[in-house]
Each structure stands twice: as C-alpha cells, then as structure tokens.
Length: 249
Length: 249
Image 1: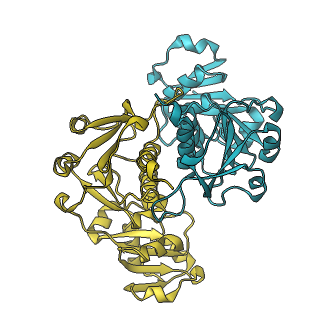
Image 2 (image 1 turned 90 degrees about the vertical axis):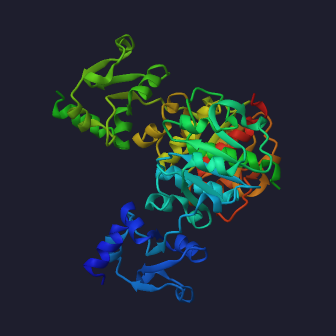
C-alpha cells in the first residue's frame, strides 16, 4: 500500500512547478513506459498493478519498483482510467543553444503553442517523419505536461525538445527560417533544400512580430474553401510531409 | 431570466438522445454563430448576453431571440467559459444514399471514428481543402456533439455530413475507394484522378475487415521514424493535401 507521502509526492508531479523541482515527469501505460525504457530516458521509479504483465528482465535498470493496488493507482494517476503502469521518468537536462546542431537537418520551432494535445500531436508527427528535434519558445506549453506525454504516444521518448529564446536561437543557428503563414509562397512551390527551421505560431495569435523579422521565407498552405485557418498540428504535418515528400519510397 | 424549463430544455441538447428527439444542436460563440447564420442551417433560437454586440439586422430570420444574463448563459452552455452567444440550430435532414453525389469529387469516409476533437479537426481540414462532404459509419461520433461543433470552428456549417452504412454506400457510389493503411502504395505515388472515396479508420482498430474487402487501393503515408501510427486527422489532412497538391497556385 502506498503511504500518504508517496501519494502526495507523485500527485505533486501532476504540476509543472514540482516536475521542475524534482526533475521528474509521469509516463503511463505499458506501451509508452516500454518505449521510455528503450530510450535515452532514465526511469527512476515504477508503479504497477498485479495484472500489468511486466517483463521483469527490463526492470533491473529501474531504481524503485512498486506493485500497488488499482485503487492506489487511481490515487496517483493523471488519467481518468489508469492503465496499470505508471513511471516516474527523469527530466532531460536543459541544453545550451550552442550545443544544439541545426545544420543539415530540419527543426520545428513552436512560438507560444498552448494546447497540450496540439504539442503531443506535433511530437508524434515529427517522430513519424524522422525529425529529430523541436524547439519551443519559453512561453509554450511544457512537453512533460501529462496531457502532452499522453497524446505524444511514446514519441516524446525519441524526440529532443528544447525550450529556448527563439530569436537568439535563430541568430546562432544561421540557417533558413521558413514561417507557416496565411500569406506567402505556396508550400509546394517552396524549395526546402537540406536544412532549415520551420516556424509555427500560437493557435490564436500566430507568430510574434519580433520573430517574423528574422524569417527568410513566408510559406503558406493554400486553402480552397472558406475555413480561416488550419490547426497548428495539421500545418506542422503538411510541412514535414512536403519536406520529406521527395524522399518517400 | 430563463425559466427552469428553458434551462433544462437547452441542457438536454448537450446529449445526443435529446438532440435527435428535438432535431436541434448547440452552436456557441459569435464567430461560429455568424457562420451558421450565413449557411444553409436554420437557427431556431438565440441566447445572448448584453455585451455580445450582435448585429440585429441578421436576427430577423431567427424565430426566438433572448437576451440573458451571463449567469444564465453559464447554466445552459456546453463550455467551461461561455462566449456570450449560444444558438439552437436545426439538425439537417438525413439523406438517402441514392440522393448523394459521389461522382467527379472526393469524399472522406470515416469508419468508426470516436474522438470528437479528431472529427472536428477533420471537418475543418476538409473545409480548408474545399472538400464538400464527409460520410461516417453509423457507429462514429456524432458531428453535432458540442465538442465536435466547437473544434470544427464553423466549418461544420459548410460541409455536408451523412451517417450511413458505408458498405452499402460504397456499392452504390461505384467509384474508387482509397483506404489509408499502414501498408500500401505510397501516397505520393498514388494517382487519385478526379473522383474517389478516401476511407479512414477508427483511432485504435483501423478500418473494419468487412469494408477492407471493398477497397480498390491501399495507400500509405510512409514514415521515417519509429512512431507506430499517425493521428487520423493528420492522415486525413495529408490525403486532402496530396489530392489538391497539383492544383495549388
């Protein structure tokens, strides 16, 4: 049985403040937890119920393993219907801009994205299309928010996410910046070459005026109907697709 | 002030059973309600607060108009933060398969889609790319569910959605059926010609075995990473984009 202090410790990790303080975040579900086990992430503690059917061979690397009742799991879970396994995973170290490689690759940059489901979907899309990294402005929703972790479906374990000052980053990266805009060159007429940053804006406000000054290419996904805008995760996926389209088998 | 019976009537429309019974659904927010005003839909009753800033000229077509307090609005709204205007809109008539045109156009077909946010996003994407109609299997989430209406952001007012037996529909439509699959011909190598049905499956189970027998083309969006699948709304958008890609200006 979990003690009151164990329960309140895990529950504190539902909140950003305590995730930062303890350098831990929560991953739930056997499938996702397995993906984190086989990733660069370190699982510090694991809670599972009797019917979780875990392979014990994989558990030796985990510091603490606790079999708990389903009732206790419901007390610490972030889900309305918990999924038998809950892991506390170590937050990655923050990286300096200078140590991040932007050359010969494409990076997604998100300016003030707010919806956890959108960020989770973008992480999943980036992983699908083999993008290795995403950079987010410091006011974007946190990637280790349980809703983001959940909607990224394990893909977060394979993508590097950095929270940075985007303006400063663009200056240092010195590669072409392509902004997803309502007006600009059509995406299928844009030559993406071999490297660049794809900049996508906030769900309501778009890209901030300050960052727009640093943009090299305004790129648009032309519409055929009367809809005013596309969801940011949809735009991200169309950019990833168009960049990779010529390399599809 | 709203009477108890008015409040309970509007609140009943939060549920599918009563939407079907009264042939009404709820649309909220000045922007969305305006789009329904300028659509084929009929607004039967409107509730608005003092600060809603409605143009009265547009209200003459609406049978009942009620100015209410914000407190009353919170009692009938489907949103946690109501948006000053709430409309009761007439449900469209169900259509016979035979009366729907499938020739010389592309139609999205959704087999058992469950997530309201996914359906709302697909409706918005279809509208963006000028698709005119979506057909859903009868076990799919209802398009007039408040969460679908909300996430479609007004696009539902411009797209025809029909709930049908898909197998029967495919037999009658007699046009090529393209299924979004994990294995198949790459989407960029597929020739879509001038008409077809794009079939997308349930979030977890994919397309049902029965429907797969009627499919002409298995089409896949090739992945480059380790992600197991793409979100269904993302897949839908990549199909719409690829179909329209050659016509982009």
